[in-house]
Amino acid sequence: MNFFTNKLVILFVFVLSAAIFADAQTWTAEMQVKSKIAGSPQVSPDGKRIVFTVNAAMMTADKSEFVTQIWLAKTDGSNAFQITFGDKSSTNPKWSPDGSRIAFELGDSILVMSVDGDGLTLIARVTDVHSLAWTPDGQWLAGVRGNSAFAYTGNGFGNLAASTVF
Image 1 (cartoon, rainbow, N blue to C red):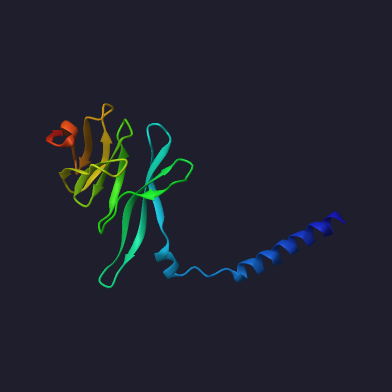
Image 2 (image 1 turned 90 degrees about the vertical axis):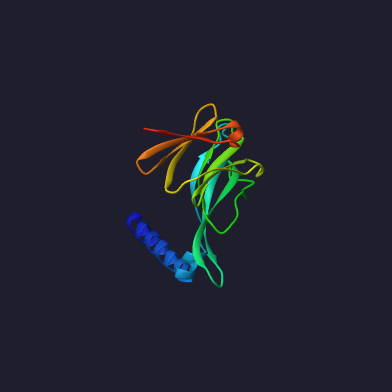
């Protein structure tokens, strides 16, 4: 009897699954384009917030492309909101050590903004940057471009001094 019951349960699950999936929509290219993809999560130094990117399709009459923007949320996923906007992708967000600022890339620029969205500062115009990192004291921002490392500093990053590090 146990053998018969197991077979009956398996048959029931199979029929139920087939009925459920029969009503499901088939995945289409249009659905794929409408999907938003989250990435590059960085937890704040105090562990209370997370900065991340969201990649979404930008479809207008004259443009069709994917654009990435930066979002903030609490680490439990609540209170999520977008902090960068525009036609170009904002990528590679990095928290400052004190958690008050976020450095990121926007096209050929490196920018720093306060967490509340104020005080957007252009740090440098440089292409092909990756691996942005803050120094522990928050006074320098370093990165890699091609085969060279670089660092930027300044009084609040207002007056920049660039240094190439090898």
